Length: 452
Image (cartoon, rainbow, N blue to C red):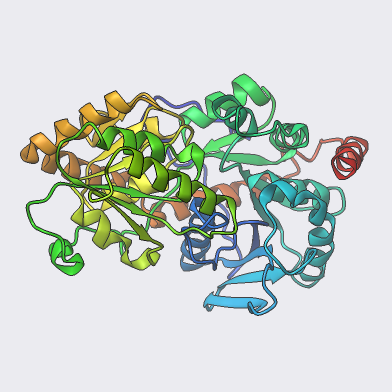
């Protein structure tokens, strides 16, 4: 069997597998696990962002490609339905694990054993031959299930603790349990999905040299994200006013304060901040902090806090903007960047993580150093000053998304990988069939984490 790890040049994708693939039985059931990121949730709040979108859209695309997809998440509200049917063959299943209330990710670990037990009831009925976990918390669930059942296990990290703690050490307490689990996932899963060459490099440099990887990027829905010709009219925005757009959660790592500081250096234009927040949670506190900075810079008449916008309506905001800014301190991939590009809007992003793969400088947008308000202000002014060039950037960006980041093509790549793993397992040469299950190590990590 060929190795699953694929080395790629920057801004390129691996070829599709060349080997003949066996046919998968009609509607093969598979499970996607996203403990804290509910695929059915409204995005834009602290607990709902890129991961929710990724899992939901991947699940729907896989279902359209012929799979039966069950997406498992933790139930946080007693009034939420246990099961939501997104299509005849794609559904979200909410499992009770701990109290039926929102719990921050940092405190979710102790609920995971109950999540595992709740999942087993569905696994007993459907016998999922493949489980695809998302984020390290779900990865722990997959690791635990792997000690008890035989299935193909894939994982997508969405973010890496080792990188997060480097870029936000003053705000994030180092979680040794997370680091141990992330290492175990890479070394024990059948395959880890990396969404950019940069993520692959981080894994090999800071996590482990062992383990199998495959580069399959995130995608976007081209039926939702496309250029909207009358976007400004729909939003009652003046046709000639420069519009700078931010879309995302209120989180310090998103770099919104850098964008506000940059706007203070630009004499004209409006900044629209699109994203929801809850006054009782950390995103609410971050929004209040940003509101204070807006007042300090005397930008009250130039910055609008739009609030949460339905995902289906975001294309209007992207299309209305002259430029979309993604000023994150760390971003594993950057779904906002490809959503904006799909709408024909040029992107300015921090030169970090997967954004260096998503955005091609001087072709689809610009990259700037993170936390550098001067560089960001200069980049914004470059695009605002040259509308013809901005249109070229937008056109190139949409073409890049159509070619590389559309969900139909990505679902085919993912399904092809699933089939390859099934075939390897049937032939008895899966890279993980020889794995000695490290139950003692798992028990030690669990005991230490629950005791802390």
